[in-house]
Every structure is written in C-alpha cells, then in structure tokens.
Image 1 (cartoon, helix red, strand yellow):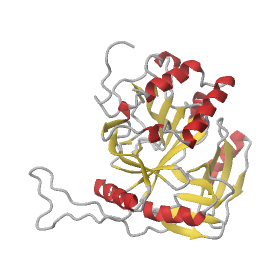
Image 2 (cartoon, helix red, strand yellow):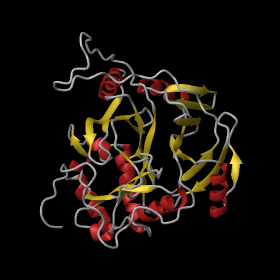
Image 3 (cartoon, rainbow, N blue to C red):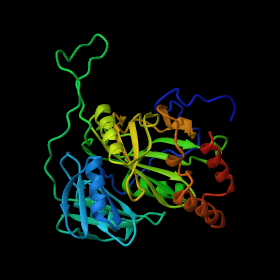
Length: 377
C-alpha cells in the first residue's frame, strides 16, 4: 500500500472492488430475509438485566420467572429475549423471512426443519448453525406487538431555516426510548466462510468491506452487510462480521429518535452508574451517530440515530481498517471498545489468540499482525 489514505474522506467508500475481489453478494441465494427479528441471550439475573434494560430505553413486553422479552416502541417482535441461564452468553440472532414458504425453501436447502416457536412468540422457525458455530434462527409469521408511544424527534433551526419559534428546546434527562433493533456485530475465526454462508442462505448483501492495511490482496477482514429489499432502502448494515481470534458477540445496536435523545439518555445512564464504552460520535461506514455502553453482564450495546439507508443497487465500498477510521468525529476510540482494556475480556481474547494460532482457521500470524496494527493506529 502506497501513499496516505484519508480515512475521513468519505462515508461510503468511493473505492470499489478490484478485479477478482469478493462481489459482496450471492448470485442465487436460497431466500432473502427482511430484517433482524430479535437477539437471544442467557443471563443468570433477570432482575438486574431488566433494570438496565429500562435505563437503556427498552420496555418489557413479557416477563416470567425464566424469560424476559424486551421491546422498542415500533410494532413487531420483541428486540431481545433473555432467558435465565447459569452464565451470561449470547445464544444467537433471529432473522425474519418473508413468509412460511421461504422458511420451507430454506429448510429443504439446508436439511433443517421448520418447527413452531413458543406460543409467546408464535409462528415458525428454522434453526441453523453458521460456520462459526453460532445458532441462527430464521422466523416467520410471529405475533405482532402493537406500537407504543414513541419519543418524538426535536424540531431544529438550521442556519436561516427557522422551524421553531417561541419554543425553547429542553430535552429531558431520561432513558432514550429504543425504537427498534438495528444490527448485531459478530466476530469469527472463519470470517470468509461465515460471510459466504449468510450471503448464500439468507440473501444478505455487503455494503462495505474493510481490509487490514497492506493486506488487501489477502481479502477483507470485516463486512457491513444489509438486507436486500430491492428498491426499498435498508439499513447500511443489519449484520456486521469481523475476523478475530474467537467466535463471539461484539455488540448490538438499537435506534433512538435523535442526537438529543441519545445524549440525554446517556447522561441518565451515567447517573445510574452504568459504564460508557465509547461515544458520542459519528461513524464512517454507516454514518450513524453512536454511543456505546456496557450492561451489567459485560455485553456491549449501542444507541444510534441517523444511519445510512441503501437500496440494492449500491455496490460494496472498500477501505483499510484503522482504529481512527471508525469515526468521523468523537472522542478517541477506547481500549474498552477495542477489547484491549486490562481485565477479564482482554485476558479471554489473549487466550483465544494463542488457541487460534494453533488451529486451522483464517486467523493466522499475519492476520494477528494486521489486527495489532489496527489496534495501535
């Protein structure tokens, strides 16, 4: 790689693929999912999980002794399902198919079965396992929750365009009301194989690829992937995959009304004693205004607003991965966000590096050098 690349020169990289590089989509996918439906976790303390969830901005959709369903204000499914477990862990995502016919097509292609979901959710699921050994549900015809009152975006005066007169702006320092689940980020030791699995089976398409500086010829190491809804714009990414020394959840993101809701909600979380991981800032890939937090079980969750929406015509952008290139503006990226803050998580990742280098996967010594270069960029 020659010359200096300005990581802040654009939002969606204007530099496309070179000849022979990954096209970012499958030519004939089995089905095309519509969106994420929900995420599933296990946690030992549902009361503690619910307390944080309300401070973060979720509403409780249902609660039993062994399960907590959390929702946003948009109609549809719950955003998050938390079941009681001996330890905290991410179980996997659920994607929404168009209908049960697509589920049957997926089941036939993968050798899986379409089975009923619990009555509290309704509908059917096909449960699969991706190459990273993550359980992936694809669901259809689930119960629909009605919309809840939502947090209205503020009215802004921009320059000489005056839309608000005799009406002071006073955002409440209160939980930012979550509207919906936006995306989940997964780390994989088999990034390329896992990427192709999602494109082929679920019909997802890539919005942006990132590669380690100096290693573009070895292929990308991260992809921001959206649902293919044809001419209907979809979130810049519903799923993001990144290469790493372990197969694990990285973070999940939930949309709120606007910057004021995000910032005031963050002040509320801080006052309740919760830990901000990184923020507030604006991303490059996806353009979202972001604010990252840690829940009491250590899971990273994100408030976001004002993200990019792409239709199916836009081809993938390509850019080098750097720590400074993750945001257009905002505070310096933190060691906590990168997973290198001294503590239990960084020790687990260090052990994972040693184990990964002994195994046959995509995370080899050269990829490790690329990752360390990113962390120090």
